[in-house]
Length: 287
Picture 1 (cartoon, rainbow, N blue to C red):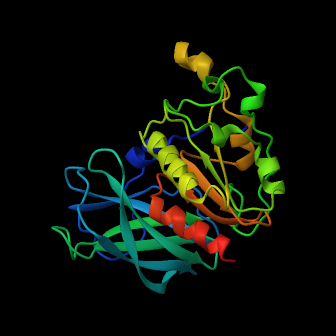
Picture 2 (picture 1 turned 30 degrees about the horizontal axis):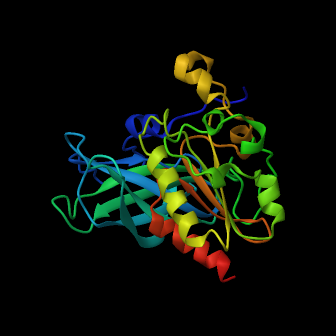
Picture 3 (picture 1 turned 90 degrees about the vertical axis):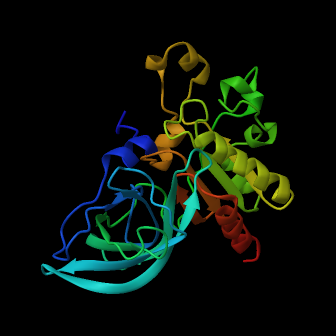
């Protein structure tokens, strides 16, 4: 296998506040980078905020000042507001921001909650922005993957670990859905084996979106592992789906929205709310 699959929870737990800027760091506030595939251009920045005891910081939003490093100096690119997105498990959640990175290289994010007990405190992240993302870039043609469908198996348990699967999510390949000339939503998630416990809820969000927009767009769920039935007996037998490799996914879950021409219009790493996905889908439906 050409790369190691990194579960989202491992990313959240192991990547903390990083240095790199001369501004003093407030030690009672830490930023944890969730985004693992930042690249030049428009991108979705995702991070969590923790206090000194590693408990989630409660805030409705956070100011983020992004600066690029040029010739050893930081050049501010302005300040934007990141919105808090609650996760469907526990009290955790992340902040998301649609950012723009005109150049690759090292960037610094200085983050300050707008309200709550940590309001006014500052945390910092050093961001490594690539020239090109490992996942399909925005505006590019989506991979014409030929994921297995319900027609090829005896039961849906061979395709998904969702406890209450919607058969419609497994009725077509991604390639076939792209040929339908409709917008397409594809979610990559493993409800039973997701270490962040957000994959099941993510599939539920996509099912709800399909219920509301199923006549106007297509929806596909791809399980991250190719042999979920075997894995229930022995996790050591896990085989990553070749479709996951084809899409270059470095973490889980991921959800993509394609327009009617099959181009990637939006992509979301980590759990994504119904509101965020609906907004992206409505944009391609009206385009």
